Length: 300
Ligand code: PAF
Image (cartoon, rainbow, N blue to C red; front, side, top):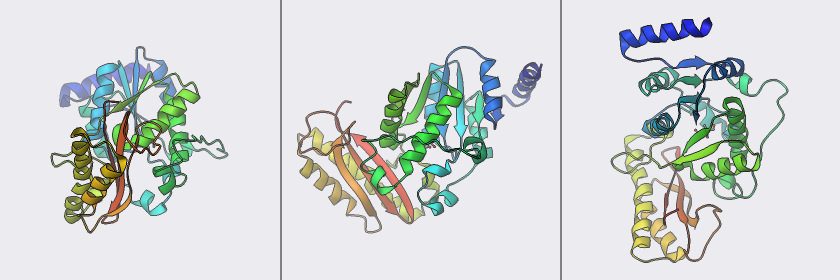
């Protein structure tokens, strides 16, 4: 009965506005009830909100490949190693829901922290190996929080496919690893990074960049592109490729580089020479905003 009333309401909204608001649920019980009422393949896009074209690309891929799409919006406190970063993370729920309505998303799951981590919660997911380097070193505890919340969300939604952006390359590897190890019956789909016309990788954090910092941040994507060009013209030595990257980043005095490396694309191990799939990865801070970006060096 409740389901029919909600469908009638959605039909009426569509008639007046041309849009259907997604059904918004905040509890796991409501989510499970709603999902139980439908059939067909289910796509899932986990997000922390502050949505941009990069997220919408994930949603479009999910909509194209599945009968229904769920998007979660949850700023996960356990993956922030810096309390200031958590406090300043942009929160734009109303605007997010409007964008998701324009993309005809079926369900938005927006739990609060108590729903995800209820009193007494004490199970954490730790992925080893691929988390020992890069973000794992610079953001201690970050991947424990990511792996735990993604595992929870995948258990709650139980999608056929989950869509994650390649901009967070190491996170994508972590999620693939945990899905494999825990026999979560889900296909993890990586979607290429969406960039602004000037090359900057889209990120929810970009709204915090001043005009000066945003201009300066362009050396990150330019540096990655320079390495890709050097590789394409036959340079396969890591030392030379990393020097190209460092030189490009060094042209911006405001940028503080955390890491700028060329590594094996899936193990993230250091290499001397490229003979298989490799990836350029950069993390840097500019104007108080931490940015990450990466790009492929060969067909993966
Ligand atoms: O990439 C993100 O937005 C987050 O790390 C994720 C995957 C939604 C987990 O909180």
